[in-house]
Image 1: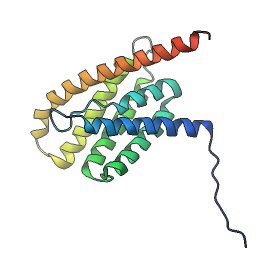
Image 2: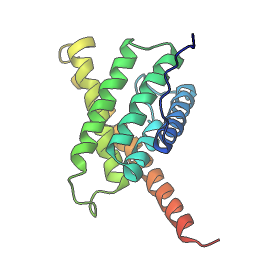
Image 3: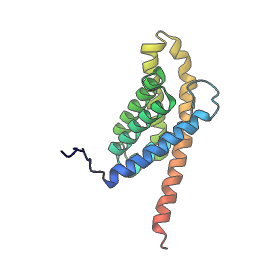
Image 4: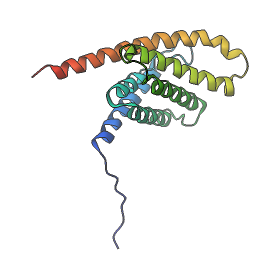
Length: 178
């Protein structure tokens, strides 16, 4: 009697998504080591990878990398299915929804910086909506809105500038003959 094995074919796209998800998870771990001025305010370093994936490989690949980052981070932090995991998931889903809608905006007016800012606002909006309905019901959440919106604007812009520079450096490296 021979043992049966299930073998799944692995494509080059699967390998690329796994590498990019590993990078996003690594950035999530690095970000957790950074001191935060207030709980919940983080630069969103993994979102740099998500936006790069979106712009280079499309929304579906970005959604996969984002989902794998959430699961991997939740497992590594030991917070899978804890409130922080659900807040991160709500933020990621809202951000991906905003980016899916933003694909229909004119590309000449909406580059990496504006997309990153929109995604950051979507992320914090998703988190605050879940927190308002689950963790902090009532008007308390509205007092936090200006602080979180300011952080989303700043970190979204900085991350978008980093993405724009990374895209420019990779396109110039491809254009330069060896």
